[in-house]
Every structure is written in structure tokens, then in C-alpha cells.
Image (cartoon, rainbow, N blue to C red; front, side, top):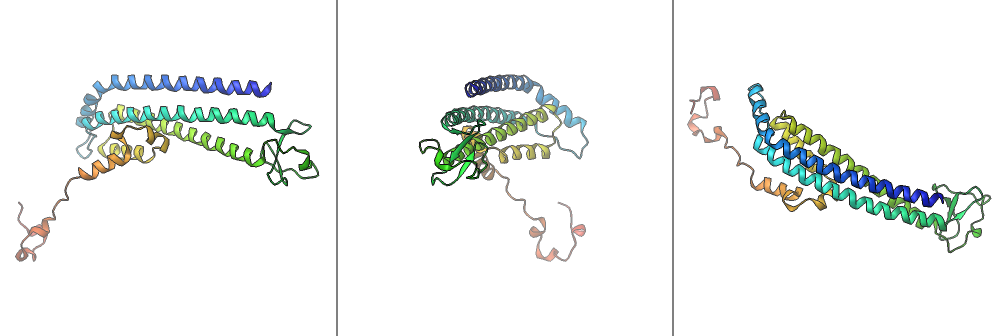
Length: 250
């Protein structure tokens, strides 16, 4: 009964989390849409209010960036939901394996290795043969190797879940920075680059082609400005004897 109750508790928690993530994305998208109209004016005001030495982020670039953030956020939600469906299946497999496992007198589940030599607990600890004889555990029960593989898979996808939520928090922070209208051009470029660099593979798979990191990098390479010619290289050889301060202005 405990395993059944725990299973349904996990299912309810996952369903509630999915619903929360969907609501969060729709609310965030709505707020960003409402903010777009104010973004250009706020950024322009910030430019005029800043000192001449600070170049504020281009309002047009910021507006385009909000579309990227929307695409990243949507892809992150999809990745979270897909990963949690995998976790749900793994939790079910774990419950089934626990039901089929051999139990000690204290209720601890144990698993025998395929070679019949080693016995481990559900916590991954080895048990001495004087505590339990491996031959007592029937061969049809789940093996230690199968249990450890399943435990590793659960751990892996729980880590992915954490990574996806960390990236989602990074996106939320980026939205706040954009909406603040206080980003300098340098900060904006660093922020955008970090979001592309830190993007988890699971999110990358769901991002539309237009915003895929590899495509954006290629686009930037083709659209990079041509290198500025070296002024000194254009000076006739007869003027090479002069210093830069002695050269006439153009």
C-alpha cells in the first residue's frame, strides 16, 4: 500500500507541476507581449539619461530578443514536460522492481548480482554474506545490475530536470533585465551569448530552426562587419617617417 500511495503521490506532483509550468509560460508570454510596447520608449529614455560614455542596448535588437526569449521559454517548457514523462515511467518501473525484489526481515529490499556473488540493498550498499546468503534470493527476482541501471537512469533524468529549471530561471532573469530598460549594449550581447552557450541539449532540440544556436552563429559569421583597414597601412611610404600626431587629419 505504501508503494501504491507513493506512486500516486508522484503522479499527482508531476501533473500539478506540468499544469504550473504551462500556466507560468502563458502568463510570462502575456506579460512580455504587454511590455513590448513600453520597451522601446523605456530603452530610449535610458539612452538619453545615461552618460555619453555608455551605449545602451538598441531597442530594435531588444524587441527582436524578446522573440528569442519566447522561443527559448516555450522550448524549455516542452523539454521539462518530456523529461518528466520519462521520469514518471522510470518511477513506475522502480515501483514494479521494488514489488518484485527480495525483502529482508526489516523490509529492506535487496538485489543479487547476475553472477550470484554480490547482494546490494535498495540504497546501493553491499551486504555481507553472513547477513544474507545470495543463494536465498531466487534467480527470477530483479538483479542488482538491472536495479543499478534503473537507479542511474532516474538520477540522470532528475539532474536534467534540475538543469532545465535552472535554465528556465536564467530565462526569467533575462526577461527582467530586458524589461528594465537598463541594459547596455555590452551587457545585452553578453546576456544573449550566455543564453545560447548555456542552453541544455534538451531545449536545443525544441528550439525552432530560426533560433538554433548553430544557425545563429552561422548568421552572425556571414553578417559580421568587414575588418576596418589600418590607416597607417594606407599612408604612402614617404610619410612613414612621421609619427601619427604629425600626420595630417583626413
